[in-house]
Image (cartoon, rainbow, N blue to C red):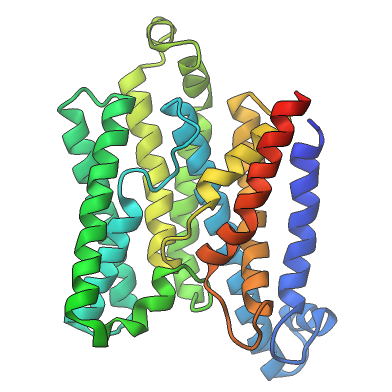
Length: 323
């Protein structure tokens, strides 16, 4: 199981990536797509190839960022049920996007901008209020849930007050990488990489937290600083992905669980395995979203949850019996 936790998702990710480049409503297959990406072939095929590649890279970056963020949050807060959207980031992003659509018009870049600002604002409020209670794991969870409900309530009110203006943002609210552009990647990838670097640098500190807060403090881990940095990096990854593709659920919760259920226990290895599983989940989910009801595309979050939740439950039951 231990070797499978890294080699398995890595191999599956390669296969899913090739399938993502190959599959689409247009005729060009994988050989033509690869040739076009290398600089040869019909300009029309090259345009299709670039679109599929951008979509693939966006899905992989979003999945990896959310999964790594989820692993960091779960280990730092010592709670396997939290995800990167814990601090109300997804609700804040949704509220920001709806504000843009309702009051400023259906401009894609305005939706992304206000979604990102809404997500960051939710994070700042949650961390600020939680700081008054000592920035403990429990306070972050409780305040994050409260902020999430506030954002959700605001979104529901806007959808009820302005139902005629909401359809444009509906697919975004359920998660999709269908509208991702190269310009989106130019800021999504750097922000995601920055989050991953912070999470990687803090590996030893987070592993020290597993020994208990007093022990971690004696080892110089700096519990509150470590917790704040991890939560901030995770929220940045979640905010940037939500701004580009909407709040894609399930990945940040499920990927760390898959890593642990398949044999990993140490945070450093769970982080790497989660990153691979997360990228695989979103790339494969996007592929399924395109093909399940072709030529119509399905939203990512409901589809992934519908398929992945029973699988995760099965692995959890099997893991409990077998280990």
